[in-house]
Length: 231
Image (cartoon, rainbow, N blue to C red):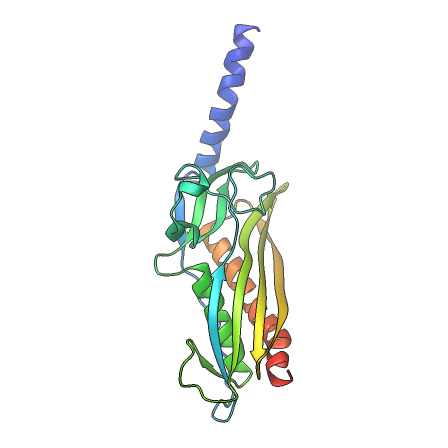
């Protein structure tokens, strides 16, 4: 192979990485976001049924070098099986270059987790429907209902375009609703897509995920509240 071509081939990836860093400032780093939860709409809960939010489980599966950006992955810490759960539970997206190449990570701020956000979103939805929400079983009395939630997806990614970046955020959960000793499963899924001019900055990701949480709360209200009111 021509030595000039070899030098060019070795230089291109480095140039792309440096260009990405220059464009975004910190695309190769690990950043953090603090997401604000939508407040529950006022509703009378004094006579509402008690609903216990039981287990909320983060069941997302991370992969090394996935073939789709919608699959959770991490840029730091080595193989995903060696990354502590405390990091995975906060990971919500990857930082990428203008060409879509994954480099750094986007984590929730210390103190926030995917499980915690979903639990808070479910509580907000149920309270808006007039239910009295308890975080743990015990002392709620006869007639109380229970919901357990498996989080199968909670992830963000972007698709690069000409002059625009298309941000995506996706959550997929499955509820186990138990009322009067009978349990049924209810899936709740929401995906949103937003256009951003230029590169995606932290404020864009924050807005995207907060919009996702608002839409998810509305979905829980329409799909789960009905099942609790009319088992």
